[in-house]
Length: 194
Image 1 (cartoon, rainbow, N blue to C red):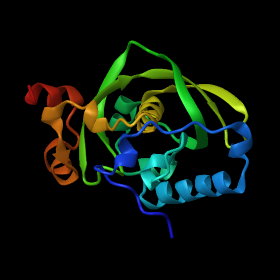
Image 2 (cartoon, one colour; image 1 turned 135 degrees about the horizontal axis):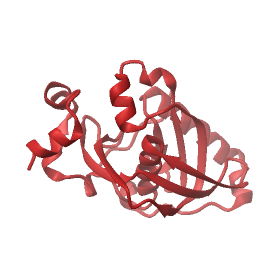
Image 3 (cartoon, rainbow, N blue to C red; image 1 turned 120 degrees about the vertical axis):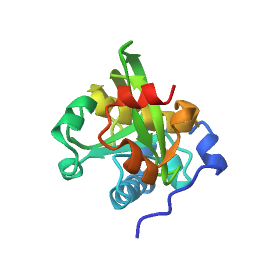
Image 4 (cartoon, rainbow, N blue to C red; image 1 turned 30 degrees about the horizontal axis):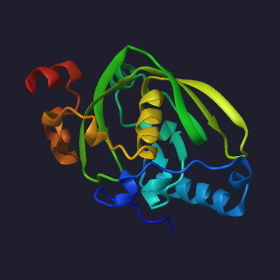
């Protein structure tokens, strides 16, 4: 059974998570934690997950945007979001080395703010440096929706939630998002919320 997901209001979500040493990463404890995080993310289902979301204040993130999650999304929306499948990846002690000035705004939700979402502007491209699940240094460029996921999860490690960055007038329940904004181009949503 996957671990319980910590919800907004729990102090662990507002703390700066501690970095891990390379030899600590290879321990059974951390490897088991990574597997528990993958299980929790998939069970939710979600596309990203940070260790603080299961009450562990450590700089560990897992990301996976499976192709099966895209089946119910129109090609137009996938294109607008620049959303493509992302294979499972582990980011330990991640830092965003560079961010593009080009920003995109979309609705974001969070497994730790269950049942809600809001519009958040994020950089379209980020360059990430981190350690992988074996403690090996990695760097990669994430674009589009992948970049959004990375930024959202790295925020978790700094004690920041998407609600700190959202356009507050856009805050909505998932039910109302579906009823009022599903399929509506983001610029139209922004125009209506002015």
